[in-house]
Amino acid sequence: MALQTQVQTFEAEKLIGSRRAQVLVRAESLVPGAGRDAIEPLLADAGLFIGEVDVQADRVVLEGSVACQAVYRQGEESALRALTAQTTLNHVLDIPGVQPGMLCRARGEVNHVDARYENGHMVFLVTCDLTLQVLSLSPVEVISAVEGVEGIQTVFVPIRSVKLAAEASELALLKDTVALPAALDARTALMDWAAVEVEDVSPDLGGVRVRGKALVETLVASGVAGRPGVVVRYPLALDQLVELPEWLTGDVTAEVDIRGLRSRVDAGEGDGDMQLTCEIEVRVRVLANATDQVEALADAYATRGNRVETEDEDVRLCRAVDRAKVCELVRGTVLIGENAPGVGTVIATQVHPSIGEWRNENGQGRIEGVAETRVLYMPGGSDIPASAEAELPFSLTVPQLLNDDSLIDLQVLSAEANALMSDRLEMKLQLSVACETRQRTEVEIVTQIAEGTPLQRRPGIVVSWPSPGETAWDIGKRYGIPAQSIGEVEAGNAVVLKA
Image (cartoon, rainbow, N blue to C red; front, side):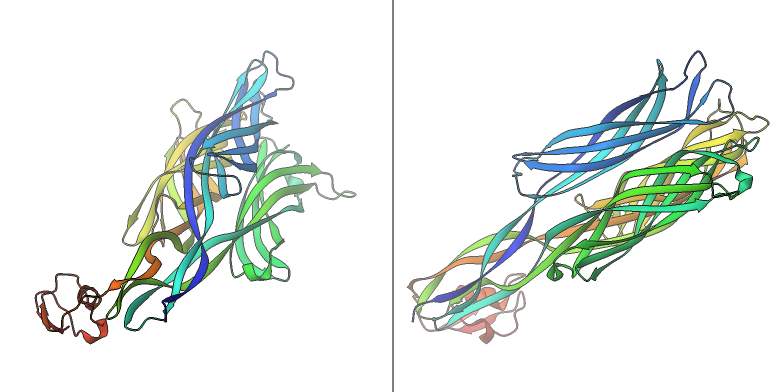
């Protein structure tokens, strides 16, 4: 009977290429009523939303939008003013080997925002960090069984292949109204910033349900003497169903991007308190992984009859996906600039964290960086608001190993600053870091097997001296002897074989 094989096919995920880039985006807006008075920007923020990702031959085109906002002071006024600006992001990243139809994971975040007044306009210079990973799914055939030949020795290895099988997204509008106390004397909403925390991702009827909350902070202009603004903090509940086939809901993760954030102050009904209404539009993206598990022929040889000829191939695949999420409180003291007025009362705190480096220690990942902090405050003995910038180093530990292709999502859930002295602040930051590392490995398998020439063997006794690392399989294959008939193999000790 001729040699016969059974073949099984699975899909292997391959990382075609990854890129990290930093892009500088410019936006500007007309400053209403600007005349001879000096315009001093006090706070500035920006949000990046990547809308379209177009994978083309050897490159990826990103299109998105950048929404900017600033709070400023005009002349010697004590009141706070605000404005917004919008611009687009169009950027091309060259990645050799990518082709249309491949999967692309794109992330973007704002690293730094600089606002300055120039000739009647507020000019924003926004530094954006972009991260791309392009993946492909390729069919791989493995030999799962060999039949029809007597005396053939085979060894099979288990293969576990994890792949990004599907991606689905939905837009969700989160909206809520918060009552503002009358003592606040709220006038208008000046600036908003938010962070979205995903708390649960679980299968549901028709797809995957993503639950969490958007932690929103709004700087509201106040009519209280000596305090022109106050920050109102409130959560908005996130509960969104993303449609996905049931067979893909076993291993899912979710990412949430903020597309737009708006708030306004309205008068309550009758003589009721003022109300703050907030709307936040988010894109909820669900990524589904699937796993294939097969037994693949790794090696074979014959002990009688004809030789067995094999062709080997190294297959690179993703064998596992490690995820970790850590929330950690970071404390520190920062000094304000020498020329800044002394701090009296803090009004608002904004933070942009950036990762400087990562490393692995004792089986864990260590992430270090700097949190760029901007504080809006009232100076002691003055009713004119001021602001100051400072940097706070941070270090976080995550319970997994990291590599160059790890995706790290870092955001600030809350930030507080208190004046210790007129020239220094105590900072408390609640940082959340989510890491995903796809463990990739190479497996050597047999892709072709066929009968060759007849074995040339002479009966007798063979004494073999194993080399370090040699196994019974290695010795049996060399002499055409069944591996199971060979006893314990140890380097330096002779093995007596009957051929």
